[in-house]
Length: 81
Image (cartoon, rainbow, N blue to C red; front, side, top):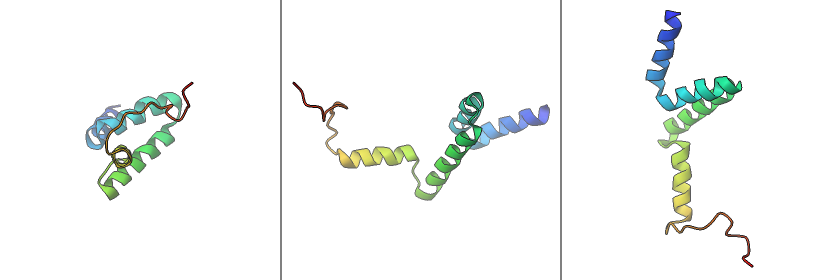
């Protein structure tokens, strides 16, 4: 029991809180531990290769497409009557 607790504490301290909490809380409760683990691994590998997290890539893409930072409603393509 002590080894398991020690490993869990080490995992939390060494991997960062966000990935570990996502792995244990959402993955274990929904039965999607593999999916949560793969998500963490892919995020880590993208960060290691590019220097940016996937969220930072998405923000940079949004800033490139909208440099003036115009705020448009999500339904801007719908014609107003």
